Image (cartoon, rainbow, N blue to C red; front, side, top):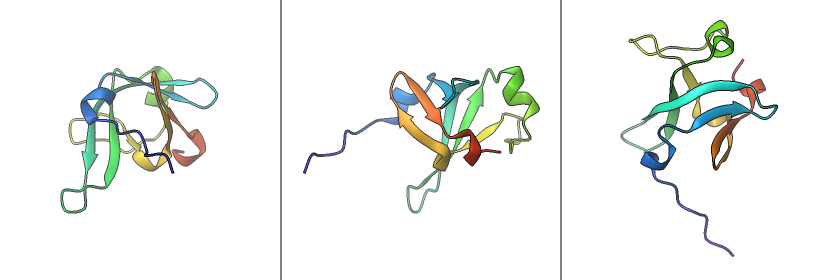
Length: 87
């Protein structure tokens, strides 16, 4: 069985977040995780697009939109999310 490729959070920072259909949401500004379990909870968007701004996404106390990490389906040059898991 092949070992799963490891990704470090600093490799994800600054990557563009897009949907499966190519809609751009913004860039990864930070990652929120549960300190006890290490579970990844949210992606904090920076430079949100007008499309992301009009969605009723949960926000940080500073007003930055949050994408549930459970919506992430692929990580590479972009972070690909399932839009139906966000809305």
